[in-house]
Image (cartoon, rainbow, N blue to C red; front, side):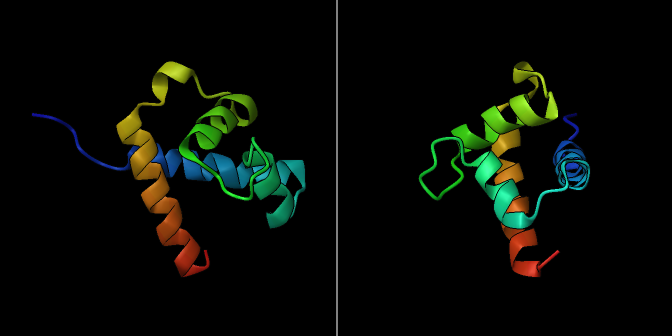
Length: 82
């Protein structure tokens, strides 16, 4: 049986929140930090590199499925104004 949940994504979202607090950046500055190619959008490649660079997540831990789910959750939270 496969353990299918969003625990990893929730943990990453919490790490992002903590990074924002510790780095003392506002939402615009945080967005710019994650927008690696400075095109005004955060792509999955931008997100993956930011998780590695800013949050010290190991690259092998970031699978395509985990990244897809993270994007879905972040989109949900964005619309919920969390």
